[in-house]
Image 1 (spheres, each protein chain N blue to C red):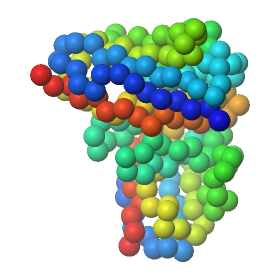
Image 2: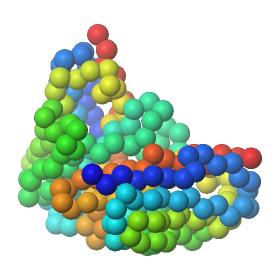
Image 3: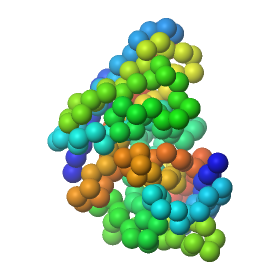
Image 4: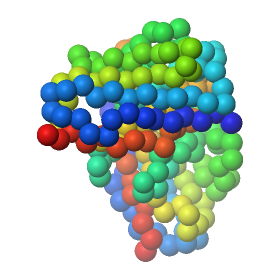
Length: 121
Length: 109
């Protein structure tokens, strides 16, 4: 059973860069038919898609975050990563990594447990 | 960008009730709509994809329907473990973009 696990700094200072990694276990990140995504949820609020990376390495980002986001993949470690620059308090959220399934019409079928990131000095 | 509007935003119901949640898209999205359940402190869980396909392992009391702009999630007979927040989600190809509804919180009456 494929599993995703987020890791990274839980506290980031304003104006710095948030960095998170999602480790994929129980399957290969290079498998066709899937892409790999980041989604966030501010405390008490709804879900916001951040971006995704195809198994080929192509990336697409939410236009509202595009200028600050980079998603990359490390196939040797079977993981993908998120960097969000110039963070502010508005970026405080639970960050989830998730798998997108093309056979399920681009639904997020597997999620990590989420990791809380707080932006504060 | 396509927007998704869920109604109601919150709902009180009793165990055994039949409940329907609606998701309306700002423009047609064919059947590319999914539904998720989220419990406090947990990641969302996929319930329905492609508007009406039940994800493996999800109880058959959950069903989805709709196409175009109007979609519904129905729980035929509420169970205690169904009290949670539900989100709809769509994917648009041009440009590639995922959007979630604002959520519907289902509470015990």
